[in-house]
Length: 244
Image 1 (cartoon, helix red, strand yellow):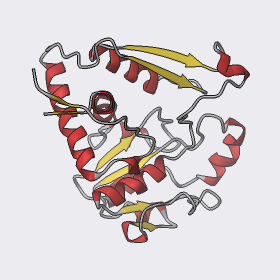
Image 2 (cartoon, rainbow, N blue to C red):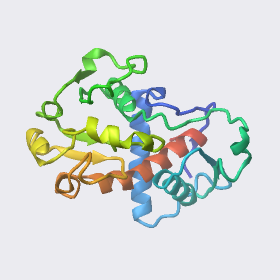
Image 3 (cartoon, rainbow, N blue to C red):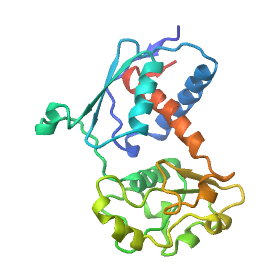
Image 4 (cartoon, rainbow, N blue to C red):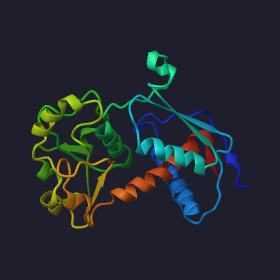
């Protein structure tokens, strides 16, 4: 059995909480854990550990991937929501992580940590909140035209136009985001080997065309599978520490 290096409790609440070295370690562990899983090798570093997941809103992919991940690592997962627990009456929770629709801000933090350049394009009225932007301006460029933002890039990423909790704004958002669909014309402006990613669920015909998300450049299903193994590596690192 490999020796384990225990460390003080560490939290991962936003992308910038980890150093580049820590991300490199987690990605290496994710690759090893995935290979073991594919080879049907039992690996239970979190035996007798329990993960409690608190959700204020409905969850499918996040809940199932963390439940499966804990099970595959030998642990157990408990799901709580505000409808069937004391959380519904305002019971406080510490170290709370909520849905702040901050995928873009995580990408900006990633650009800072990994040293890549991010092209950003958002409709008027849905611009970045500069109080939440931690990346240096040299790591991103804002484009008014979404097609121009795709020019020469290696990866194109988007998200749903109306996130959970904003359903009342759906019609206004559909109008505001008109023209921001990632379609074949925009992907044609990217690098020939560029990939398309989406964290799912996707609305075909809104933020992405069926031809793109179901096309050869799309890696959304690989992305969905790999999140499971990265989450497992992250859980292993946060709970157990580095494994030498």
